[in-house]
Length: 299
Length: 306
Image (tube, rainbow over all chains, first blue to last red):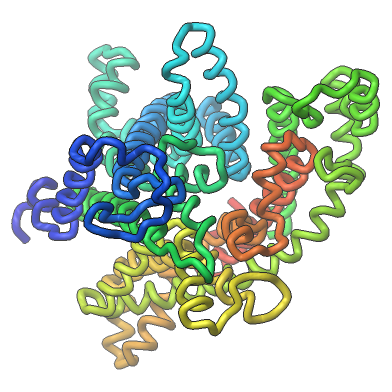
């Protein structure tokens, strides 16, 4: 067998992963710059409800006469921000918790992991809803008293990012702890210890670089999971609220007005395509990364 | 074996205790109470309500009393669905969710394992690629898209199945597929990955060398070991499916228990919330126990008591 290729080369040889990366870049660019290119007033409520797709409105219009293309792009912005930021929160919490548990070992480790087990035993949806309904009024009140009224419309997004991140970290913590357990018995850690390095240094300079690859792979798989979770929350009416939009909100609006008599198919089809394309790309990219970085295959 | 089961059942009680405690205090710490309305209730009425639902007195005392009631199997009254007890509500709705979830569980497990083994056996062919692409689609699409799409196709454009409802056999088909799809996809991916690993092992080469048919090698010898990661996923899967899904149940208007998970939090209906959480946890722990026992039977190298 030839000498193992670098993960980067491996990833570039994976057509699905490359295509996914391109799709994601296109979606991100469209989300950032797209709304600026559309004529002004496309996001406003008008009387042109339920126009089918046409030259002027390529995706048609929604119940309130807003251009659906504009809404889908706006949804892309918010869904992506929530997905990425939420995944990052879970990433940080999971890594710190997992490293402390794994490195601490012994009694501390078993207590910390039992706590994770208990949290696993609570249905995630309930956990999320309780967190959201506890933190949401708190943040709102805090913003009001500190003169941030202008930003109150966005407080829900901050809450969603925090709460989704704080419920998604359990698996990350388990993965990181497992890695730390196997790493810390290796000789380089012993060597670092014997030349008198502090625990802090060992954790951040020796253990972290060794487990960051696995954690990053799981991070790319967490982003689509968080986007999916957000869409469920929006479907249930506790997520992003109009006039803001997320893909989940658009889809749940569509699911409510679709019925046998009036087939407003575009309301369901375009947001569904945008969302599933992005999620597919993220999942493909995550799978590709895992294949490229999987230590068992590198051997 | 018996000792193992006994320890785990003891563990169940500990976990239930922790979870009940967490839910009890979380609901109390949340802003807003169960009787908050647009207009504030007169004080004496609110007092009476609190007394009726045993929500008066110091928090610690309420908690102790509640634990006492739980030990006697009394889940108390729901504060939202007035004068109905949590026991009644769950007794009405859980069987519905359980039936639907049970069917979805079978569909997801059998379909997923079959698709996954097929894809692994036909690795790098179009069968493999199509199956895995379909699986990725099913994972990436939320169920409130899959559901309406299925309705659009099989109930509106080609009207062979009912749009929703409960009671007939036909009305079970679309909801159980919608519910099962993402899990079937996940299981298919798990099965494929683990099957590919197993197929490189020596005992598979031996089985092939002694002239067994390819089907016998894969479905009899390889699957028996390759299925282990799937089996360990079945515990949480069963607990999730059997307690119902609010999304699928609301799309197909099914009177199941799924909606109580969400509404009990939104209505600050603490006892109903605790009730569904207790049911969920019990199922989760019991199914995980069954899975562990099953593990021992499937793979004799694993011992449960060390």
